[in-house]
Length: 232
Image (cartoon, rainbow, N blue to C red; front, side, top):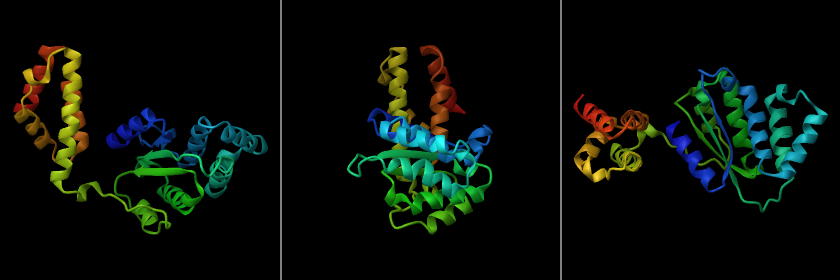
């Protein structure tokens, strides 16, 4: 989720983020598979007047479209409206995270299958990140011809993960240094950064949590928290 969120931020800055959907079992509505396609179509419509106009017609013709079968949803809410734009238009990116936390995993598997099946008909590229879930894994294994290979984070060499985490931690510490108006080199050594990376192992979310913990208060509090993390 940390990676997906950061990816969304980068896409937004480059004006390439078409839509995003983050599932969470702690937020009941976001865990409902039935609202995934309606949410994506609504966000895509805000990127194009032609898509918005086509989507508005769909809703006028069927104001209960959000409760229709998933196959009907993707055709009427996404494929139909997306066909109104030129095939030479630039690709928008749709980011979906946490499908493993949604209710009714069989429906989630169907959503992934439908996205893969129709990927060549969509003027979007789709980025999906989630934990290892059998229904979702089955959908990817049966995926369409346009599917890119899946990337399994826990199978990546620890050295490569460590490089990414070190870059992330360094940038976060630079942001903290700017906030407290004290150059990072004056209160964080390279050895300290290496220790933070080692603590995180392969867990990007752990590095995120450590940096968020350190980034509290003014300079004295920041240093105190950094020392606490390195000692404990």
